Image 1 (spheres, one colour):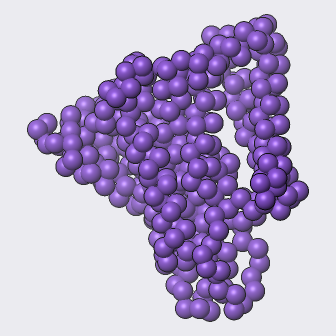
Image 2 (cartoon, rainbow, N blue to C red):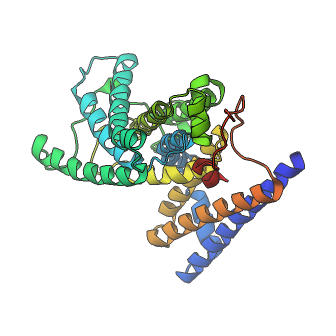
Image 3 (cartoon, rainbow, N blue to C red):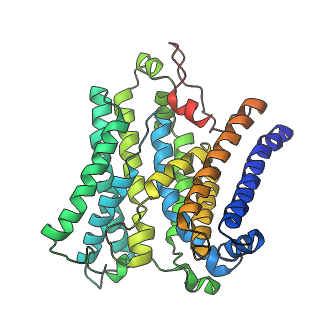
Length: 369
């Protein structure tokens, strides 16, 4: 089994090596010495404590959005609305945080803000969730439309409702702010890494453990695997799908802990943009494992920070191409590894889902394999 897993990892390692080669080619195309550009990227990420802190900062919102997509995927759903869920939840969370008394301590203020944001994230996810569960309308279509609605609501809220010309909220209350990691790791001084990162890691492991080990979590996965068999067993498939989608929206909203609460101290239009889309890649690369989601988020965080580190020499657009290419390479390599070795890189169900009625291979398993 260890040999099989080693062989399964080999294509992924080769894909990453191919990405490094592509990076060198891009640097050379823009007149930079490949070795020099690669060294600059390393120094800006893992080569210095500040750079590594920035990697953790970039990875933090991706942990939440990656987990959010994975939860929905377990139920056979595709929550591509995390972008809108996070944006509107961040605005509301920051507004709530700004209204809290300055004397309110963190153990009280922070849960209030996070609960408010999570509720809004779940509310935004409710529209595609209820339409899919009750009317069979595909959640991808409705989630795209909801994202567009949120994109229109946010600037209107700032300019009309809040009367803000700066497109930002007031500063949040001190008790709602998450402290920076440099308080316990002084070498991180200057980086935006905050305690949102350990909070995100713990959330990923706890949530994935509950999904794998509790009856409701297993039922969500069974619904994604064999919905008709679940109906035959008396499981309310629509209710489980609705719950998974609402939970997914709430988890995506928790990324506000890294952006508005742990970084800016307020919400401004566009803060956290892109995290929802990158979360899809994190879930795909994470292969249904908690450690996989964490490593995938750090991997994408490294790419994003590396792009900033070499931005003076290599255009950002070229680094975006590199990031997208690497994601495709790793995804393809993972599929090849699964087919060649037969290693299924998903969480093991305990016990087996109902088998009273045969059903087609679920979309969630097809995508992940």
